[in-house]
Image 1 (cartoon, rainbow, N blue to C red):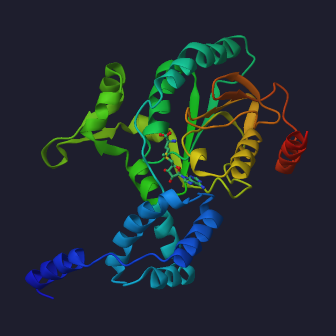
Image 2: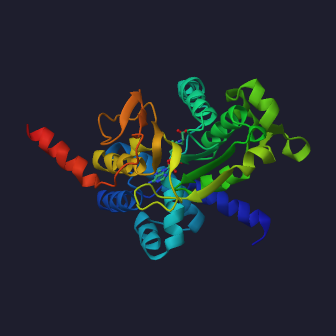
Image 3: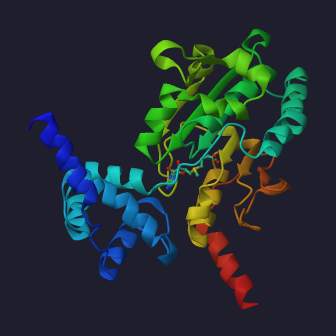
Length: 314
Ligand SMILES: C[S@@+](CC[C@H](N)C(=O)[O-])C[C@H]1O[C@@H](n2cnc3c(N)ncnc32)[C@H](O)[C@@H]1O
């Protein structure tokens, strides 16, 4: 097709009316998305689903949501693409600053004192579960490298995981629009972020030092066991549980608890409406949970659900 024809074609496809998403079709997608990601799409999310999938339908030149559903069911690659479309990826550097303040003033000094007293190794394993485009693990990396420098013998390993392959590609590149810089303290900007020029004007890039301590991997929080290789001193699981139903939230928090090292910390997002969900974890600050000093015994997530059912009956 000549380029003139192709632009006319894309203009026409833009002008096409959006096909209707029938209630039965909505329920099919709702069930599929819930099963594959734990994300609960309520009636209020219907318009969002239509607009996000419609974009994909146009790319694939499909004319109805039913044909797209059949495509997703028969093509595992398209299922991954659909989940990429569904996921809400909003994030920014040093989101919920009090969290980072808590790390800097309470947890980091505690780890340092323990290492100085030979009560812990100078190795830290951190997990940003649901890391989106990487701002969260990179914020952690900047704070950690500043407080625990390699020159003082510290070895820091950060894992960033997400369900969406699209955001993981962004995160691994470690490149963002320069507007994001305003969320980063000046000291960290100078040390860890490079400003693009020429063709890269308007972008910022993480330094190699920063990128070298972070590894990214696709991981669905609703599918255990998690292949993350051992336990973590700190897990961030923020602003993702809000998309899950109550039972799923409990299972995920409970599962994450089993991946905490003794005395490890789990941070949840401030909007996460969770009360007393963690069985063996202690609430040490708002949305901050800590595992016991001794290793946690593996326990079934059902035990918490059963206990909640019992509590509700009382
Ligand atoms: C709103 S972002 C939060 C990013 C970051 N944690 C923050 O607080 O800024 C939510 C992320 O959760 C991811 N997500 C949704 N369902 C998931 C699942 N079942 N397993 C892993 N990640 C999931 C989405 O792809 C999205 O990147």
